[in-house]
Every structure is written in C-alpha cells, then in structure tokens.
Length: 246
Image (tube, rainbow, N blue to C red):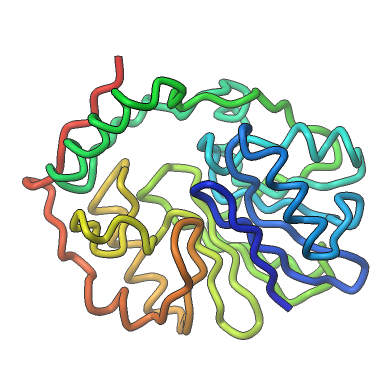
C-alpha cells in the first residue's frame, strides 16, 4: 500500500510494513501543522512510522526530522553517508556548486525569491543517533532492516547525497532524482536545481537499466519510466542558469 502526504511543494510517501510504516521525506519545517493533519487523515499515527527514508538533506525534504524523532525516539532514519554532515549544517549545501536546470528556471526562481522572503534554504540541524541507519554503499538491500523487499539506490546528480527507494513492484520513490514539477518552464522531468547535470543523467540511465516501471517523485505526480527514456539528455550544460544565492 502506498499513501501520499501532499504538502505545500513536497510529496511524502508512506509505505506499509508488517509493523507500521516507512515514510519517505518530510517536507518543509513550515509544513508541520499540515503534515500531521494529513497524516491523521490517512489514519496513521506518528508513532507507527518505524523508518524515515531521507532522499537527501534539502530543506523541503528534511524539515520535520527532529519533530518525528522527538515524538518517537525509536524511529530510525535511513540516509546516505554524505547526508550526515550535511544535516548537521542545517542548510542546503552549496559546497559542490550547482545550476538551475535552464535559464528560464533561473529567472523564475530569482523572481520567486524576491516575493517570498522566507525562502532561505535552511532547516533545523539534525545530529544522527545510534539507531539511525547510514548507507555507505552505493546501493543496499533493506529487507533485513525493514522486513519488506526494499532497496536503496544511490541517485546522485541533484545532490551528492541523493538516494531513491525501490520496492518489489519496481516502483522508484526517487526524491528529486526526477520530477514532474514546473514542466511549463522546460524542466523536462528534472528538478529545478541540479548539482551535476552529467551525473544526473548517468543516474537516469541507471534507473532505466534497472527495470524501474514507475517513478514517485517528491514533486508532482507519479509517472511512467517512458517519460525518463524520452527526456534523457534533453537539457544541456551550456543552457543551464547560474545559481547565485548571497
């Protein structure tokens, strides 16, 4: 069973386990009230979430980690090893560079920032705990941890710490490794921001080769793998927009 908790900009996906749920991402910190309200509508108590799978450290994915850990100290966060230090920093890292996926997106993002002064790319820092699960390998089977045939897939490109979750039906919960968001601005199923476009498309080819059937992104609606196949390598580095954040 797949449940969606649709927040202001982020989808949080809930997968059922034999003894509760696994939650994928948490949305912005300011989504707190809506998150818990929608969780209740889904008939899910926060204490029933056994695992939190974090696709990457960005503010629109990690904003409520501390809230969930406070409610249930037994919840186990699953993350890539590179997320550990990035979560401590409490801000979307710019240490690895990055660009807007195209120049139209750059203009739109800069305009949005002017009218939305609260957009700061920051979140409450999180310090990992003893029971959290840090994935040091590229890909990793999680069945022995979660009790369900799930597999983490290293999915860099959007960020260096990006991971996706593959289920037994070949559904990929991809975070920002792909997106159905702002396509009117020419995103071509990429997210607005990309750290490394070449690496991003290497990840897409990996997703295609792995036999994924359907993608469940953090932004927008689920879509078929055919969308990835059709749009791979459509964006080019020379047409990206410079990312400046003073």
